[in-house]
Image 1: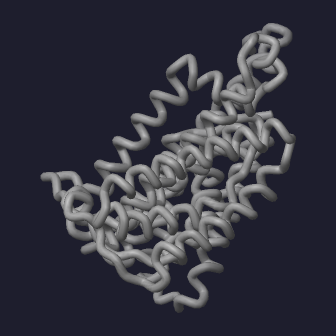
Image 2 (image 1 turned 180 degrees about the horizontal axis):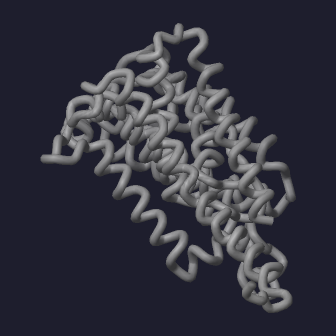
Image 3 (image 1 turned 30 degrees about the vertical axis):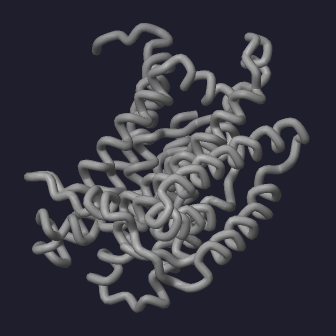
Length: 325
């Protein structure tokens, strides 16, 4: 028998197991998306085509942008419960003022991003819970949306319709847009020095303060980025639906939170993944309607089925995290 050096297994085995757990944790969003695609291909093979992906992922772009918006807030250990109504407000402004009075529409949208930045400053300076502040702002955005557009209507600007109806060769536009969003945000947040600072505000605020960085500025930057991507989400949504409604984005709050968590993000510690968040958004977009429709699940049960999918994925993450620790 070959002798084994003392201490060999106790040192190498746990390290290898933790490395495999970390790799599996990073691949979990992609595995979730792959399983949903396999299920769709098994139930309806014709859906796996250029036209099929365009149809199934029609609303994936605004969901992905809203998920990225929520991800920036979660990166700072905060939570935004107003992103859905904010998307609805942006949609109403886009379908009315941005089309009929472009200058006024641009000023309002830029001002709304400034309001988000002020919210970040208020939450930090007064040490207020972001859940309470953003919950209150959700009613403000909802009321403003109703004032701008009292009843469903309006029309998307022609240039926005052209962008959202773009059909590149070989790769469906929703997939191409998702790749671009994930790549740009991943590089800026995960590969740049300021991205490290933004994530550090949620991961170790005390160390960031000792290093001389302003937590106030990082909080303002995170909330401003949330507002920016919320504006992009609302505009993309109107570019797809062609008209607006004050309630059009109400479901995006829970979808954005679920997309971030499904993509590997956590509520504390500044632990987020832009690529994972986009994959999580795509998974929810596919599971929300195409997969459950192909399974002949009634619409009344589709929300519950989406929740079950999310719980299964989160349970798998808990098991992987325990193995990693």
